[in-house]
Image 1 (tube, rainbow, N blue to C red):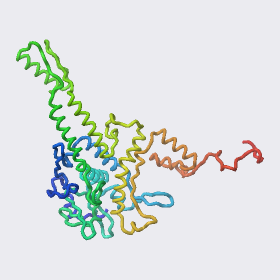
Image 2 (image 1 turned 90 degrees about the vertical axis):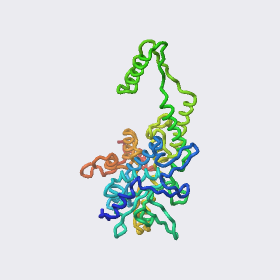
Image 3 (image 1 turned 45 degrees about the vertical axis):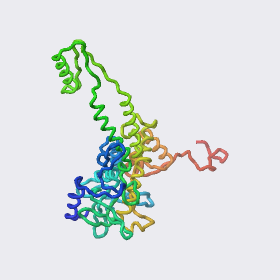
Image 4 (image 1 turned 60 degrees about the vertical axis):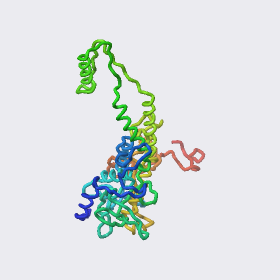
Length: 412
């Protein structure tokens, strides 16, 4: 990779990707500055960072960001021999190996996806060489970037850099009102997130403060009461937290059952979690909530996860990269252009018995050869070209040319 400009590199690394570097100006509601609080009807002030700390929200965001980051993503070109990876492409090196000097491709992709799922936009500055080829992708803090349309062209105003052409900003986003500024899913659903924050606060202050039961006795002195209380705390809350308290005399333990309002609160929390799953299009079982799971096997759930959760993210990322990280000559090449593509087969692989059954049928039909199958299982090829041959079942002949005794052929 070409050497990056040290001064510009340090400005971006030390100043822009810094959580304490925040805007304090507020624009329209859906173009608001990141982490500027928004009041909700629940009485809770909602921000992106507060919303992302809700366990259900974080689990959904973390799941999507991790799965997108671990999906094989390369530059391809269609040719007579099929789709081939263009390993010599500078874009392929950036998105698949090292986007910059201090991040791996996984870390960079995770950060970009996490950013737009929380703040609505994920930005990276595209550094280029003299031939307009990208040489580095440097992530930017969403609070340090604002987009403006002027004279029919879009410019990004980046704190510490000034005006930057929009084609030098890689911009990941999903939902947008104006086609330009990404909208935070958390802030767009501020009422739902505010309700969930209120539920968490209620749980911490009310249910967590109430004991699961109480001790009682007909006759007990103050000295005995203090001794029993100390022993109970030592067994239940102290160093021996999993100990078994021993009650002497006529001291009894009386468990407390949940009140009707607490039971209703639990049901409300479950319903809120369902709405959060829907907000991110995540199957509950994918974030370890098996109570809300669908009745489908693991393979079918993986297919649904790719089709309904990950595919919109793959498509958006591919479109943005194809638009910003290739030369104009490549974009105008309608015959053999370079393009990027996520290979989601890693999520769609069946169990061993299912895979081997498919391989067997494809081998018998002459579609796969032995080396094709070995490559799919990440195994080495057969030596001396033995695995390059294609075979078909000898009993299969073209219809209308059946061999029969009337043609004078002998039985074998």
